[in-house]
Length: 130
Image (cartoon, rainbow, N blue to C red):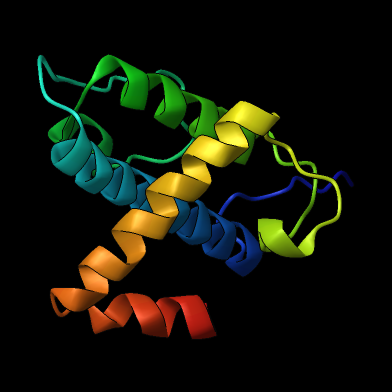
């Protein structure tokens, strides 16, 4: 008798929730940075073939540079070879190239404190306890 893997195992649901949360966080941080640092024409992001639905990606609008960075970050997150995915700063080999790594660090360094100053303490909880 052959056994089939089901997609509604707790590990799969947990992994999908974590992926969705990671992508939502990337979208939120990037849009906050983009709003405060970049002027000009902004368009929504329309990623294709995501394994989860993330409405924030199409709801927010980004400049071309931020869209490129976000697409790169989404691609890196989807192709992470480690399971479960560790915090990137704790892993010795980084998936990002040096220019994108510097850019995403700048985005995170601006948007994290920006959100906390505006009362989003739930983000601190998530960072601490996952």
